[in-house]
Length: 412
Ligand SMILES: [Zn+2]
Image (cartoon, rainbow, N blue to C red; front, side, top):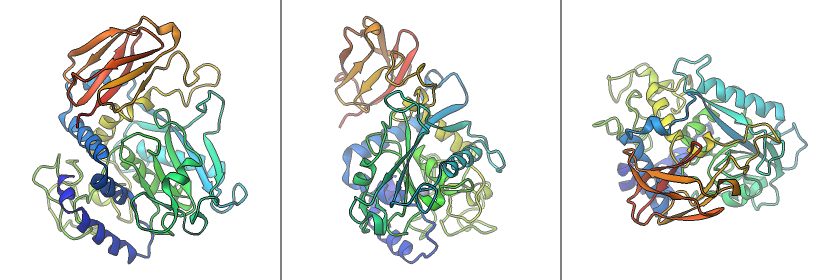
């Protein structure tokens, strides 16, 4: 990341020219939005740096903040932003195609027929909507009201291409990212320049992945690729300067893709040998879902560790306790089982909103070493907790009754 920051402009231009000259339309736009925000958005940059440091530090109490179950279930909602077709035609793909795409995504994360590891993460189409009503987990909206969407599809924020503004398109349909991982299925991205892109884990209104309708299929390599980005995986060729140089390889935990069992390479190198290094298991990179190579069939153990470390800290951790795939009427979102903590990430204070039945409940805040740094009682349905004495990092908010929520504290 720090290497990128020195050369962001160069990389953007190199990628721009390279991708413009690529007629295969198989590329991912994640780095565009990432590089743009790293340059222009200090809060975004700080959030990712803190997240990265937390993952690399492997906090001693990680066990405490992991769910008891080894299998993580992530509720997803799919928003189909079509261009006016009837359901099942053109970009307005059918429910069945979407369900099969999610099954395909799960098969790849569970390594059902691949050559990698079982990540032990599954994605479920939401069965409960944010109001507590039953849902198919699929929303459909005609996107033609957004300027340039019908002709060019969506424009990722920070990309110079002509298309519908990302925020305007996503505003047509989006669910709270704290309880659902949002997937937007679109007609095109930059008039065919990309097949997908995703946000690295930062939360907020627009966090999630975007994928073109033709790639939202059961055999798609794009969907697991973008979901990998959503859980903080970089490309296996991260740091190659747009296929220009071999990524730095001094310390595999912080160079390249920050994963040690995926040898660094250039994005165009997918052949029998890796010109960048003879070390490591080359197949782990050239057959990786996070490569641009033609045949992909695996996530590695190192990627699994990074995905799961990301899953248990903010902002993804709240997905693990979401009731989005629960049963209607028994586990409603916003029920008394749910505490609402915001903002998260926070700077100097957090609001904690609970059901009236939980007033008087004790709470504690643990630092990454497992030490209690704050404690008290929730005195009302909406309590304000001061964090100004804390330094930046990830804390665990814990309440009686075993409710737990990681809190990210950011200090400028
Ligand atoms: Zn990508």
